[in-house]
Amino acid sequence: MSLGSVVAVMVRRWYLLLAVVVLAAVGAVGTYRLVSPPYRMTGQVLLLPTARSAAMVLGVGGDAANPYLALTPGLAQTGQVIAVATMDQQVAARLASQGFVGTYVLTEITAINAPVVAVTVTGPTPAAAAKDLRLVIAEFERQLQQAQQAAGAPSGTLIRATLLTQDTTAHPVNKSRLRDGIAVGAVIIVLGALFIAWLERRSRSARHRGEHAGEAEPTLPGFEGGVVSGEVSAGVSPRVG
Image (cartoon, rainbow, N blue to C red):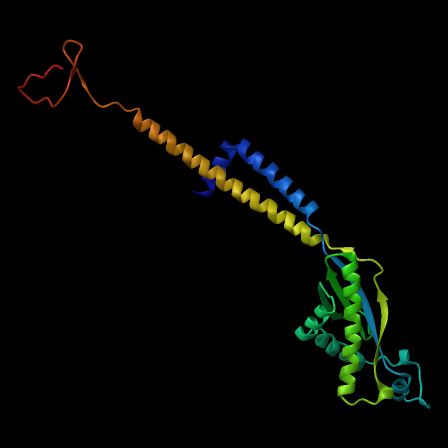
């Protein structure tokens, strides 16, 4: 069936198409309202050197300096490495054993020239998202300390992770349930269009069979109101039924 034929069928069956569109709208809105959205929370972690390391980096006298004056690019690179380690599958499995139920991602914030890592979690409920965020931030700090200890870094130079900001409430992610609603509406429209096309084809087939059934068998009228049956050949009088 060509596109033009499909359009013609839909125009001819406009009342059915209207019913399908209304049903699709109801299904989409119902899905949007019934499906619970996931919830998202974000925290930002700053990597800070120790006061001793800051003094070494800045080259000032004494054994201590302001760590915020020594936010070097090397700290940002360290944050990237620890972020990748925290997203390892084995780490994710350990978090799940601690009650983690959602998903998470760690990314470097490149908009600012500072070693800041963003921790974003998505959970089924606001409470779950808040718990998941605490678990991931704690795991990031653990991974940072473990990596430095494994590298044999002196205890006085260990980088520490400091919570910079954190969402106080979880925000619903309506994009996912909006996508689900649109998908349900689209499926209803496709199925409805297929049903209309099937109904049109069935109606045409029924009309076609009716036209053939209405055709009478060819007959010849009899001489006295009867019907002549059989073949009529030259020189032979027709037999009157």
